[in-house]
Amino acid sequence: MKKLLSDCLKNLQMGLRVCCFLPVTTSQFVINSDQLVALILLDFLLANGLDCLLALPDPVFDSYALPTYALGQLAFLLQAYVIAKLWKKASLFLTLSVLALAVSPLLQGLIHWDYYLERGKDLPDSNYVWWAGIISFYSIVVLGRSIYIAANRKKFLTAVFVLVTLAAASAEFAYFGDYQKFWNSDESEEQAEADPWLEYRNMDAEQLMYQQPSLLAKTLAALQAQQPSKAEWFFVGFAGYATEDVFSKEVNFAKTLVDKQFATAGHSLNLINHLKTRDTIPLATATNLAASLKHLGGLMDKDNDVLMLYLTSHGSKQHQLKVSFWPLALNDITPKSLHEMLDAAGIKWRVLLVSSCYSGGYINELANDTTVVATASAADKTSFGCGSESEFTYFGEALFKDALAQQPSIIKALQQAQQAIGEREKREQQEPSLPQLSVGKLIAAKLDNLVAN
Image (cartoon, rainbow, N blue to C red; front, side):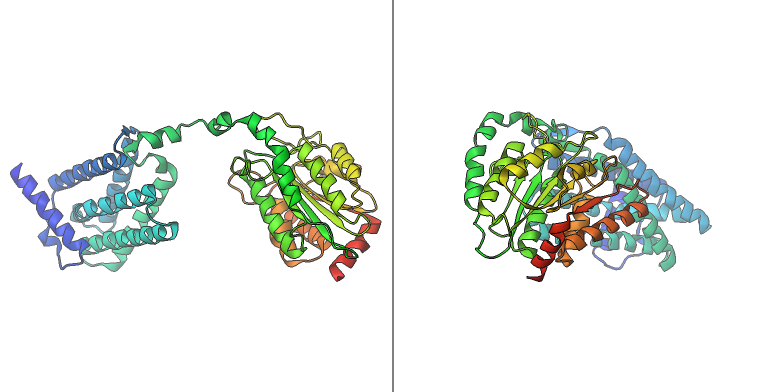
């Protein structure tokens, strides 16, 4: 036992020399099966201990990490075995394995230092990324040097081994990344198992609804009346579905772009259903939309100004734009109810953009000579791109991010968006959503004059 420990200590000392880029040869290591087992056990205990230390004061053991760790070690040993066989040098298996495991303690320490920096948030994101990149690069270089020495300085063998190791590690992280730590803090464990609706359940729904009149009034009061004798754009964004971030992201981007491209600053507002903005931006409700449109109707020159209304949410086969902020019971927007809101506001010139599944059902109800109606899909088709991970729906990306960012004509931008969506869906082998566009006879010339001015 004493010799086993002294040999192990010697291997660790030589491993430290490898890490410090000091001269070292394979003859300075003690290479045998006993050392292989001892170094694997040391690596296992060190990973456990450091995980537990970082999880203090309330560490919780994750038993799923055991098979994940075992799989990683097995994959490493198998590739060492295969390479030794291909090179027809049986001793290479132990040499590769022992030298790689001899540098593992320092690399384990660096990996856990990276975990500490990530969890502690003591560094700005940019600095953390920089440190994480240095740690990753150094670890790869040290691993490569240990393999290079074990392989008797054969560059091709070293490159193959390192590349295979990185590929295996990447695959392991992709499939088992959530189960690599033996110990997690009780807080992170609770967060992982938390009810995704907890914040909604804890929300004071009554207070949220009662604050809407004052919040909406404050937002509307900040809007400016149109300038006399000048045709201007007004904009309203409506993000109707609270539990998917894409809709709020989309209307925020759209408002910023339209403010710049169509000079709507002071003439634009968003209505958004989202936890993060519920106390600062009025909710996307039918009541708030109707009130906003009526207020804008009073600010606009009805004969000259144009409203751009962008509604984005889920949609139903019954052509209802979903308005949802659980646990609030909110009314969906239908083509008829939207038509009535616009008529009640007295807004004549309208560019109505509806991004949802089955949104083509809005065309017949809303189309007239002074209106543009564009929808993300046909009346019987679904559209694509919703979800919290998405930045845009397909329609929103094609129109606002791509076409309108370069194209001052809203009609040409909508035509470009239609084409781009069709091409994207074909590439991705999606069932065509068939975006719809209706341009009234009178509004086409009206919008051309606005672009010319």
